[in-house]
Image 1 (tube, rainbow, N blue to C red):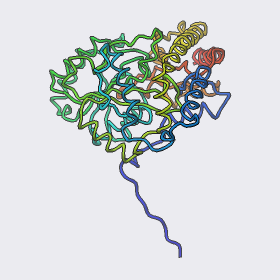
Image 2 (cartoon, rainbow, N blue to C red):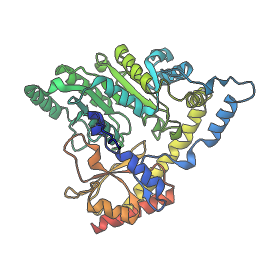
Image 3 (tube, rainbow, N blue to C red):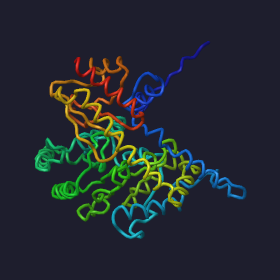
Image 4 (cartoon, rainbow, N blue to C red):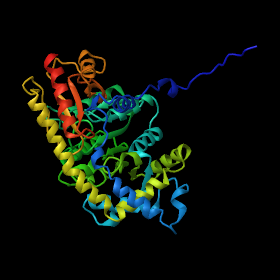
Length: 420
């Protein structure tokens, strides 16, 4: 006698869908013919193979402690957290004691820090204010958690439009929607996807406006690309360092993945609110009770002996060069003559393209399918909006492809654009 299996899924399980990022990464890895300007892989040629090998050799030399192959702590290695705190203090222009190692938690990439933050802050139906455009993986995560993303309005120049936001907040107060706003999410430096950094007056103005509307809610600044400025500058102060944000609970999400080695998957969060941080650590303990101790030990060593900064000194000009190669290839391919536009970023890994207003570059469009057929992949910009997507936008990355492949990928992309 056979017995049929009966089971049901939670609301979270039912909302879960295959992540777009996994689809893009798999396509890039499984099809060598497909030149990917989509998945944000870093440059293979500059990955720190030798530095990594030296660090592992030193950590595993005869007589070395085997503790790095043992479980670590849930919050992260104390020395690594201290080094990260000192580095953060320097970036904000303060002495090393300004940032406290106890406020840091080490995570499995900065993505885990973002997920933990949302898990402990929000319930289904809550609202999170996000940039326009914003990091599409974060937006997918919000949808999976049953949360609603609403975009902070911007002007034609991409800067925050605080007057428009003031009007929106006033309207949302009348409808009662402001009671559902539980968090703000900003990509402060060389935004994924736009490549743009928030300027200090935008950050200050946003904090003043939110305070005026009594929306002093937890705020996350995603700084994944801060250390990838082509000129090595730290950029505008973060929300951690600006007086206007001092009343807000703040989480600064950083990573050692993009600027060093993506395969190590080590990120961190610096959280100013004790209870928020504690609850994130509680949930993290249930998930993994500590990020990979060996990976942390490697990064602790390269941060401490200066190898990390020497590596940054190599990759920054390499990425600046690759950005110029992709930009020049798109210009040479006639994309600007077809009415497309984009800015040249000063750091990060991305170009943000705008096609003529009537173009549709979405995931299930003829344009996207034609690009795949031509052997080139991109991220449709429609994925990068919390609401009212601009369908005539696309994100291209210059991270992983070699220069000749960047030129060929641009040629294929422009070929499709010319025929559409």
